[in-house]
Length: 298
Image (cartoon, rainbow, N blue to C red; front, side, top):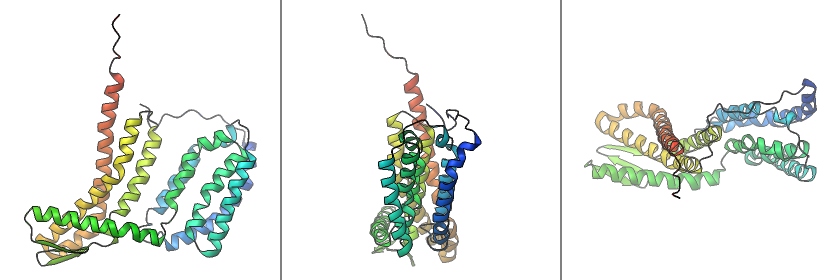
């Protein structure tokens, strides 16, 4: 089973080879630096978009660690497909920038970068850099209409599950919509308590982790990827349960104090459960790989 550090040494390219990419880099900076400045003033200040700067740093690092394929990959360019994607990406950018549609403006990077790789280098470079290009999807803000369609069911499920658990445990709990009452205290399941933040964060980390591990075991990869959303959801249930119990036993002040740190505990719990599952799966995979292959009887 390979690890994060298993990388094929890149071929060293002469410094002059990078000058071909200088106009491309300057053009991309001129287009998207203003976009990210606007994004930082609007979306990244919200709870749903707070992960944006970290995702951007990861994307830059992913491109940087595989940058040598831009000059070392020997392949035939695919100009027809590549420039078609570039044109589509430029159109998305123009519409998004002019109409203040961050989804189009930021999302345009995906077809634009994929097209540039295909047009200037070819299929091998595009294949080598597909994950950094795909990872940009975590930078695209979720549209407001879609956000409401996601948040409302999540908050409803959280409130129902928490009410059921506390009721079965014998606590005086009741629910009205997404408002939970325990004893004399009420708790509104707000957007931050839906669990969407931890789902997005853990999805990004989980995909990045599976990509860096470069495991060829499909069971290992599949179980880890499938576990991401349930793990984040269970972590959020634990967060709301603890918040209800702290408020019930300690009062409003204790509940408010705990609420300020509950998000961090949720992330720690979700990441801890994910990496604990990874350790269990790795041990299982290593034992399976180390098991001797039975020799058929003759």
